[in-house]
Length: 391
Image (tube, rainbow, N blue to C red; front, side, top):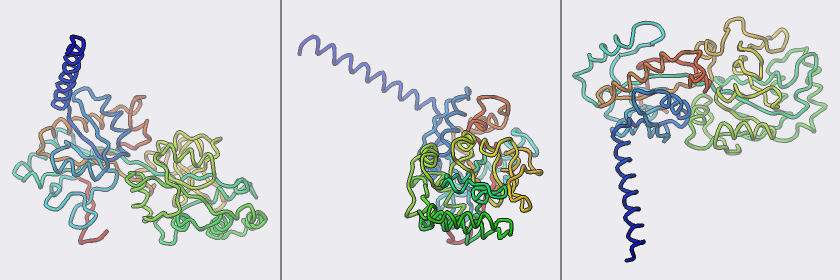
């Protein structure tokens, strides 16, 4: 073996050894957490700004996050849907594991983190399998966006077809389910929106729709997210639309927006992405139960509500901000939840990190809640009950 080759091999081995030592050191010092891909952007920003501990977030999906906590691989697992307690197919924890009993605390209202930590000591005699805790950290609103044929934007008596686009997602016969079947035309969809209101002063708009029947004869394209997406899971859970056989699949919120911008169709994105849209993008925001999120698409900080009298969208006189509106009234939303075990090795460090999130200054430009369009909402052990083998 030549001297050059020997030097190269030794150098290579030294580099590999250094990398191995660095990996061990990183694993030892870091606190590994993971789960929902939807939570990932927020957690990357939040953990980067936290200096007391080095948290490493693995974006592996909600179910993998819960499984990681149960198996002791993760200190915390993050999900982007409700935490469900009980026995059934929708329960969050696997059989044999359970959340602590009681322990509900909404941080915004009363008490302190120190007091709640003392309260958790009451569960010191519980087994580890019965010591899981749910911690809601934020609420994420979802909006339905669309780009329509040009004739939909025509104002007739001050109202356009675009103005009438609204979905009541809690109704069994809602148009959104029909839309995502993929077999309805723009003309037929417009006719159904017009029929929903059945106002005499919409007669001219109905005539306008009839005059453009040929232009609206194409089927309405729909867009959805890929399997495993937290946003798609939330969309399906909230709307009960599980199958979307004719929808075009995109792999990110950004890709969804680009598809809607460059063609006609309907899709859905998280609020953080809605806040980055502009009125000249050609994208519209649909109403949900005749309410709309405040966004650059609607101008101003006030949410909107639909007026039956003027047949137009007006600023809400009930809510002055999106945060208040999302928490109290908006139905198309999902929680970001941390699942942890109070008997795990680094629970105290995790607990301190949650307190750090709660105390984050609202006016800080680096506040991840603001950057990601989330509503801060720290609630401990807010559990939804599941009984039997229901879906």
